[in-house]
Image: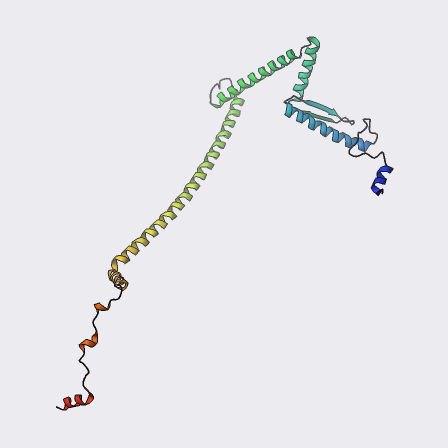
Length: 242
């Protein structure tokens, strides 16, 4: 038995599953060519970024579109990378040694870093009020403005911390006051209960007597004190007449 899906598969033997290979040639359609350029350009820039991050490589990429528009990427300065490339090409053509070119480049970079360190050290000394003789009036005014702005930021931060500390201490004071009132109320309640117990000793004795069991030997009968009722009514009348 043959299913319709099998028939369709047999009818189209050229059908391929998945994404097929694209023939590398110029795209004649202008719209498709522009769309493909945008996609491939973004992918190329992404790959350059990933290469620079993952492998710690110095990457510089320059792309010009068919309309002359420039697209570039560099994880460092593009001009510095191009200069490094020129020096490497020149040194390679002259001596054929890339290691020497890299060593010369790193020496130049080290010299630049040393100059930056010296400049920063001088700036720090100027901020401390030292080595001011070599500064001009304009540089002194600029230094004064930076110091005033720095002091303003420092004072603002200090006041912020002080206000936060004061607010915390005020809340702490309120909590301690509430706890103190609660403890005073408990102490007053305990003193009142103790005072009431000391003022009512009879009730305590009463409670002790009620708590004892009843014993008939502790009581005598009231009928025993009354005269015996052994005479009849006539005898009593005779006694009254006599």
